[in-house]
Image 1: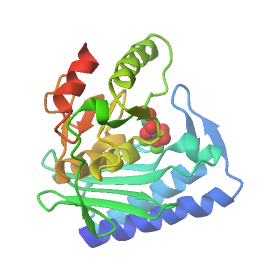
Image 2: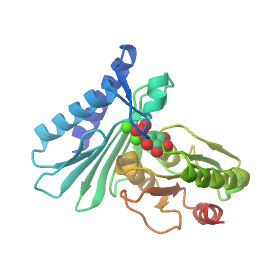
Image 3: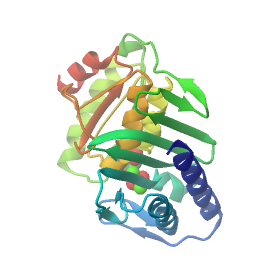
Image 4: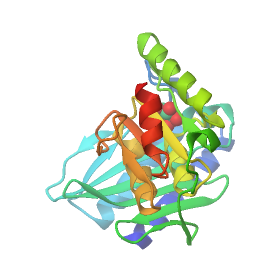
Length: 253
Ligand code: IPD
Ligand code: CA
Ligand code: CA
């Protein structure tokens, strides 16, 4: 499975890279940013690769919805995470592929084709960036930490709450970044660039791979109250573990 996932995500990333240079058809989704030809082409390629290799496996993909198979495996795919960056030419976007078995994520891969960074984790086997094992940071206090967050597409009241939390975490930390790709936020938390990341309004395909990569790198993942969370929860808090409780307190303070 590892070889298949790595080959597939590298090829999918190249599809995005090539599409960047073409004059793409771009549409705006209501309250949900853009969808481009690149998303669709990339997703089609990944789903076809999975059904050729593993006929019968289920698929949950951002653009195509859910396709039910008959087994206990489900692939959770974001063919392009960081679409707004992609559309505007900011080189911070990636492909995210995860495999769930009996309701547990067992494989996660995230690939940024511009920087050529491939993050990979298999349950129980550690997390890797381009074949080098990675671990979360060792920062012990939020005041020394570089954090990341995101804001989902809906505006209005929910945005006010998100900005309120942003203010608290910004005041409490060294700095906060907003990369525009939840998967990259998680990957960078796993390799210790970020010490923690939080976001509300995320979808399973945004976080499924990254959640496993952070855990396998020694980090902790929960909801905002610090309880274990699943990819189907709409909020996530990921950190190096050491600053987790402090982040929970700031998010709920
Ligand atoms: C979005 C990005 C963004 C996050 C949003 C996601 P998309 O995914 O991950 O960073 O803040 O919540 O929806 O639309 O680029 O695939
Ligand atoms: Ca996404
Ligand atoms: Ca997407």
